[in-house]
Image 1 (cartoon, rainbow, N blue to C red):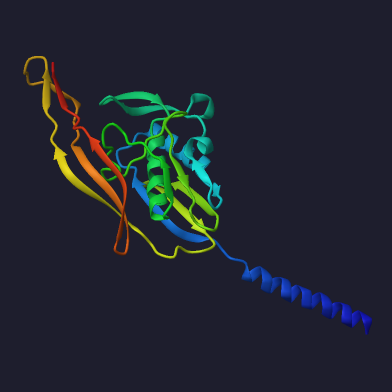
Image 2: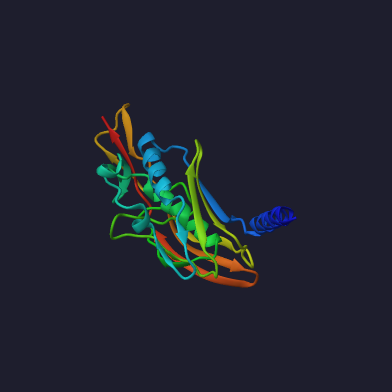
Length: 245
């Protein structure tokens, strides 16, 4: 009889334990963003993949300020990064960690959609092509960072990965947002690039810089009828340079 009672008690505990386990909250995606990898070099993709792997799994507690640089670390050779194209004063140069800024940009946009507070965000000098104007977030260890605060009453987990076509960053939580915001950019003006030539005109021409449009743009986060100004940026146009040989 005692044995039967003991077995029954074990079964009861097991059932209660199983019910409790099933009742535990499971994290789901509350916001996410992707940026395209089209046109990115193998080294840029390698660096982005490395940064995403270090970003993946980060947990942000309620009220905590998250630092991209603190989480990802230095973008240096000893950390496995490669030299890759980066924009410097309008010219593409090869430097360690080229491609990491696309990961921070993808994270930034996911954070805006997750209703995070922006503590620090820096734009690129010229508008990158993988995200709409005003939606980029440049990083450079250690003085240019992306910092975000979790305003929610529950922790957030970051999921980051690359596939063949996109960088994906998702924010996961055991609770959902009370309302889902929209993020929109309003382009106030567009600047056209000028064209400069080097050398005398011949049949042999090389485009040294294809140029980029400039923008005056504001970014807003919208909840119903409420519109929050996130940023205002002015990107100069990047001039087109043609060299004749």
